[in-house]
Figure 1 (cartoon, one colour):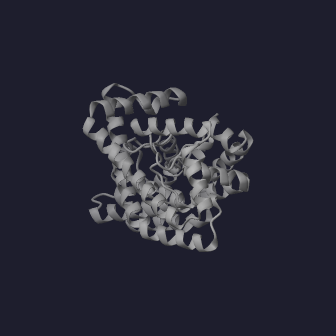
Figure 2 (spheres, one colour; figure 1 turned 90 degrees about the vertical axis):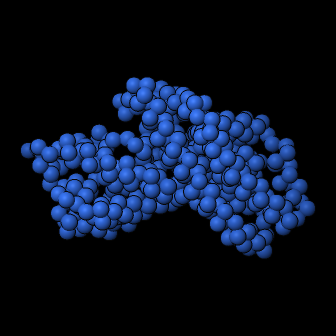
Length: 365
């Protein structure tokens, strides 16, 4: 079953760069392309950190409607365990495909588009203008990042809506129970999972206070994870080039994913210090989950505490299988890596974008 990539910024990257080049002479095509590629590399890290921050925040703020849950729903064991059909997942995927297709025309993004267009006109080309200053380039990157952040926010909101609309209340509760069962293995902690224990109004208020108190540590760990994942992706791309592998030309998603997995394994085996850094980063998330669990135990009733303990100590078979998979992913640096067909930091401009831009500059009759 084809699953929706965990990261959604692949849906927006062409949109983001689409406003960057206007009215450039054809004989300067190669120079413009080089500038475009440099721009992508320069601003990609901050955009990825924004993406990671938003996605992890969606996990922190909603335990059952976020990209991590969408990834799990693509796995047969998990779907069967929580009682979700393929048809339900396909409806969610179809909704998100429509979101991706229609995102450039999203009304909430039009003011961001206009601000970028105004900037390009006022500066006569922005970072592409002759003798463009560092301030001009910085402002362009800022506007580009603002657009990216808003687009990502809209996509995540649509994903949350799609999951909540297509899964039943009982299925959503099972998702939260699953998160409780794996909290010691999952670096993506989600306080809302405890709602599966039927919290009282007073307990929900206490949970909100705990979230607020723990959020600074959570945000700090997000930054660490984003930096680590960025470094991993750069190392993987470098390793691919060293081995003469052109990921951009690969069209078979299954084969491409296998090669990327092999490259990740190769990177981690050849760089033990970096591998250790990744482990420590993942452990940081698990440590936050442990502290959250300890604080929750104090506010739960005996019956709720027993229920939580049972979910952790006596999980069903599908949870055991998923836990083993999470451990394997953590060992191989697979946490929150983009899907094999997503744009990756360090890549050149997507071919589809370059073709589109050429047609915009030189419209055919």
